[in-house]
Length: 440
Figure 1 (cartoon, rainbow, N blue to C red):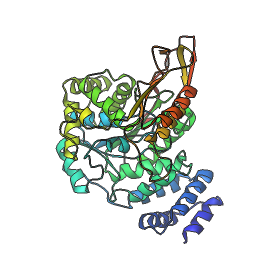
Figure 2 (figure 1 turned 180 degrees about the horizontal axis):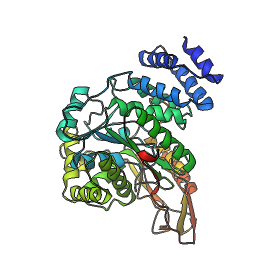
Figure 3 (figure 1 turned 120 degrees about the vertical axis):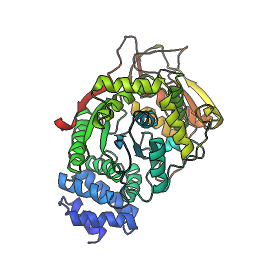
Figure 4 (figure 1 turned 180 degrees about the vertical axis):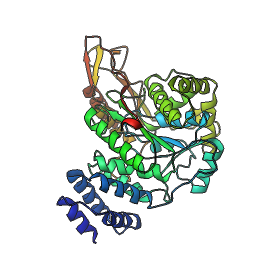
């Protein structure tokens, strides 16, 4: 069946057969489906949806578009998490090494940023020499030796999704639920996981937006993953404010290193990472209960084992051996720093996190079109949180920019994103809801 006929069928609301979906995915992989056709298909699915059978068929076809990993020789569970993406979401850089320090093995396949959200892959590429696309044999060796390897999609693992992912980023189809499910799970199934934990973001900076849409995605992923034999839990977590204190690739790497070294308490970023790690230790049978899991995690963190795993992973994948000790020698630094103050002093009442993310994109820290280059030095640091006082002595954030013009544009967005008022306000809780496997 010709690609355009498959697109026409879905455009007109038809249900696609498993063989038709498999043929289209084969065309994505071998290039017979053009980018314009892939974008048209994504929009047809966005408008008309896929039923559960179609979603499973798309997921497994993209999984099988490349190599599927097997980990029979490892002496512990193979675990991973996936986030739907947010602003300041650098959880993976801490979580992967944390799980490895507690006995898990983490072959984490990450992606670039989508839309206004930052991507783990983009953050890793701020580390000079780090190879996010190792050969499969090297990936297997690093996972076995270090316990964790955070990489991007290689040509061998779910290559159809790798291409589809880039097209979705620039065709306003990022939020499409069945495409999100298929994209996430094709990568995770290709990685050969024993269990998965989903971090589905909720709020103004999330892809899904409302709690109802986020819960629908979480339950859809749990069902499809369970059908594929991969136990899955999901947490619905807050994205109504920036998760970390920074947003931007090198800046977020630097913040994670500071947390691992114990230079800062980690705040909300470390809190949500801990909650996800607890679920993963329970799924992997590496802890008896939540208290046991929390105790294991705390001991690994304060002993320096997590920092040591992170450093070993970076070095094993080609990055600098002394990144943990001297990040300032290696991470790129922007040409300009610019503090943005509010028009009036007060307390942060609300943040439009989507606008904050777009400010980073405008600075050059995200993509305006597929394949666009990213400036990994730019972004925001010291971002104010809900409930904090801001004014002449406390800026909304510090902009790290390549030039004054882009800094000025970002400043306009930032002032628009922050609602300031006189009332004291409590920041929203981090975990909105838990969806465990037996409740999916």
